Image (tube, rainbow, N blue to C red; front, side):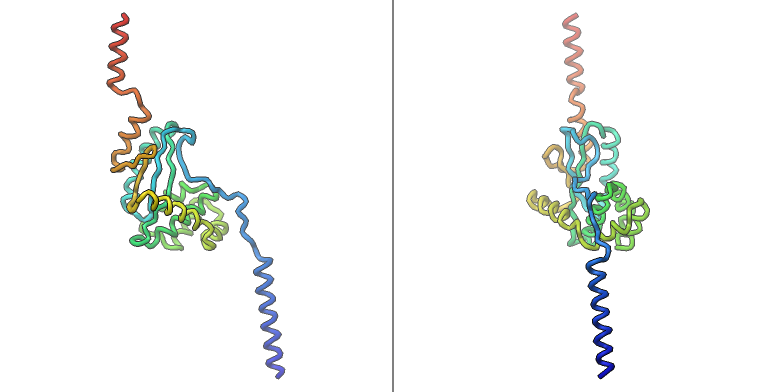
Length: 214
């Protein structure tokens, strides 16, 4: 009888401890949460690239060379916005990687984390994702809480919903000023045509006009 009594006392104590931990333990606060869409370049630019991408997609990784070249040359003239399109049917780590990057965005380090994911595309397990968070100097505890509670699932789902409405089923997919780009290899020339409106033909016309006035 006494043993049962002591057992109940122990169980009650354990339950109280658990309840105290649950209600008074550390609560994650995202008072500095960054809800803005990850972007690069000039936020006021009228030339806008939308990139729908999957962190486990080899073609997406390859396209980054083109994207980086464009941004290096025209960063003050264009805006690049990132959208998530993890193809979960073929890339089992893509969704979690997207959530991890969104959590990094809360600490204003989305692009650093983005680069880490593409640089280590073959290693996207949970332990890998945490290692990358440490490498780029995130508050890992805060980032971990964000990821494990799936705080950013709504961000990924919103992007997936937009992609579905657009009929997208492959990555990477780019839109330039609302127009879908059939081949990401064409992006440099298409961007150049928009940010450099004075073409060789225009120059010839200017020269011809100047000559006529003389």
